[in-house]
Each structure stands twice: as structure tokens, then as C-alpha cells.
Length: 300
Image 1 (cartoon, rainbow, N blue to C red):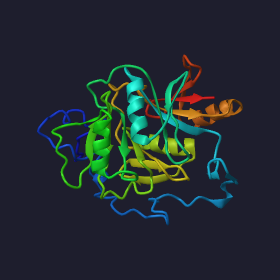
Image 2: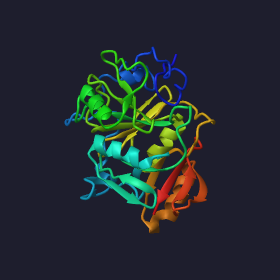
Image 3: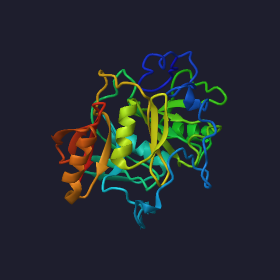
Image 4: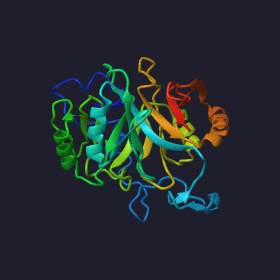
């Protein structure tokens, strides 16, 4: 049976004040029951994916690995009532510099760290977010992460008690949930400080995004999936659950980037993989939906 303390499918338990903050972030496998010791690369990165094929193309010096396709993941966008406050918190936590543009405030990523974007939108609903972030031990221990988050305006959820060997469920100053992963966890070794963006969603979506981005599956078990760039770094994961129809499909979305000349071809490719084209958004980005009906944007 699935356990809940935070995440899209854990909507009712997290607010019980006498519960510990630790527990099953997506499922029991998140606290290392089944992924405690995944295969490791020489640099310590978890690898349960295919080895990058040398024939996949020449190495692009700008990113350090073959550029598999013109479409790239620019960021995970969070819409909310105070994007500047959320961006300031995450800029502090991840040591990034905010950049403002037509689509909000961008904390640009790197070839191995996913970017984050914050833009005006609706308030946090009574339902937990469909997407939340996992912070690893790459730069701070769990206790140091918790202390840094609280200093920057975050807070612990639930009772505030974190059992030994469990992750900590927290929220940023605007109420969006995230997890400080326990030091014993090996699943996010080598993934960098922003270890994972974990989503409510089906296996079909995980496989769709693997094909869309050219990121191999690094976890595919019991309907749960995770993908990772061939360069390593931040993972994207899906719980295996159907997306709750009561949840706003546009509050947390992936933002992709493509050169203008490649947009038409990428739209054709994505729709052939199962995406639905919705049209242009107010700032010119193209809006689509993935196989679970969750919106995503393409900027060109």
C-alpha cells in the first residue's frame, strides 16, 4: 500500500500535526527501500540507464555531450502569487542568479542541473503540488539544508520531527513543498544539489518525456519511472499514478527551448509521440499537453 506524507497523491495526511515529517515522498522506494544501492558510475553517479552510444553524434563543447535533438529542457516553471519571493528563496538555496524575462524569473540551470522558473499564477490550492523538488546531500548535509532553508524563509511541515534516516518535508516561503533528502540516500548520488523533480504522473508520461528529451530511463519499475540527461545531473521522476483531475494542470509545467527554425519539426515529432497541441500562449510560447493532459511550453 502506498504511503503518504508529501506529494500530489498524499493530499490528506500532511496536515495532521502529530505526524512526523519523514516518510514516503512518492512511495517507500523513495527512502531507499528498493534503490539503496543502484549501479554507480566511476564519478559516483547512479546509472541504471543505457550507456551513451558514441555513435549518437559528436560532442557539443557547450554542453559536454552529444546534442541528441534540438529540443532542450530549459526549466521547471512554478506559477504562484509571489514569484519574486519564491525565486529569491530558490536562488539562495541553489546559489543561482535570478534573470527576468517575458515569462517570469528564471534561475538558469546548467547541462546537469535543471533550471527553475517562477511566474505569476494562482494560489496554492488545498491539494498538494503535482511537482515538487528533492534536494540532495551534494553540497549540504540534510541538517545543513534544513537550516539553510529555514534561514531563507522555508519551514518544516507536519510536526517538525524528522525520524533518523528519513527525508524532511518542507515548504518554501510561498507554500510550495519540497524534500531535503536524507544523507543515507544513494539514489541521488552524483545528481547535484537539485537532485530530482518528482511528478504525479503515469508511466506513459515518463516514457513520453524520455523520448521527447532524449533522456534515457534510469528507473522503470512498478509503473514508476525516472529519466536523466545523458550528461547526468537532475532526474525527472513520475509516480505511476493517474493525474488528479482536480489538480491545475498548468501550475507547475516544463518549459522547453528550441531554435525558431526547428519549432515546426519538433511540434510534429512531439504530437507523434502523444502530445496535444493547444496553441500560442500570451507571451508567444507554444502550449502543449503531454499524455497525462499536463501542460508544457516551448519557447523559441
